[in-house]
Length: 199
Image 1 (spheres, rainbow, N blue to C red):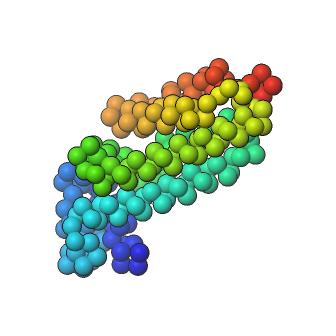
Image 2: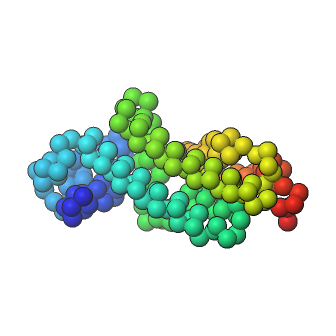
Image 3: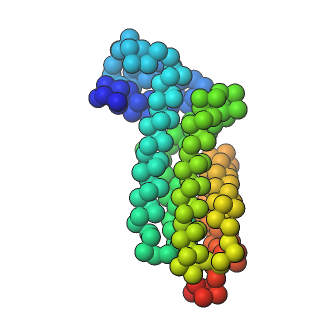
């Protein structure tokens, strides 16, 4: 994307936080970006096109985030890496600055059953996370930290389901994700950690 397109996507983020998905208009994004609505339409024909570009940009940032967490914690072992991924993705660092973002993102997710373009992009987030978790678990097995009969694919499915549930409950009921992290720790200790790899 060029500078103007980047600015517009960034403004979309801020406008979503302020207005939410249902009430978001191209004028809101124009106001947030300081650019004319006609310029925004030059880059994106419709609000839907712009939101797809926003999700693509968010996906790229998501990949960078998960890659960074895995790289930063690799030397600490597979269990700690799984914990770090969970903490990172359930504790948004910018929530104090943009408190509406998680709610707006949930609104976008709610459109996925009816919108194929949104659905494909949102599935991509889960696939990235599942792939990383599978690799972390496989590495834990190879190192002897996790049980040899652990199934990386099943663990990844459980992990992603737990994480998405924690995110959803945090937005809808203000449930502290730390509560479920305690259960993740118990799951890792009871179902994954080998006797040789226990601490």
